[in-house]
Amino acid sequence: MITEMGYLIGDIDMWTKEERIPMENDPELDGKYLGTISGDFVKVCDNLREASYQIRRRGFDYPIFPMCKEEQPVGLMLIEKESMGNTWNYYASFLDEFVQRGLVEEMFRQRFIETYKDPDEYCCLFVIDQQLTRFLYIPYPED
Image (cartoon, rainbow, N blue to C red; front, side, top):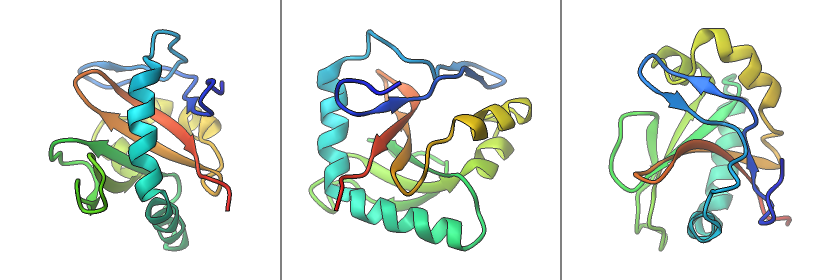
């Protein structure tokens, strides 16, 4: 479902071995918080779009970009915070790594694929923060 800010928040539940990662629309999700994510995303979106293309070109489907204000182990560092005026670190990953790490259980792989949005139009972010840990699809700005 598209929020009033144009975001898509995943519409299925994913479970890990240790905790549940919500993927359903959350009416309580703070618009101001999404605004801070969006403001940061705009600064790096061209780099993320190119990285998404390169990941897919190399044969890895379903690019995912973990973003976190602190360092974290999922994916490879792509854009360090403050390097482009951004306040988040961005990492490059893909679905297979998420399955290997148990962030997406194998039994939910197909459901994830079915809900994955067109990577030419949407960026799949995995937001890791104290307030929020979830997948978030943000549309790339139109050229």
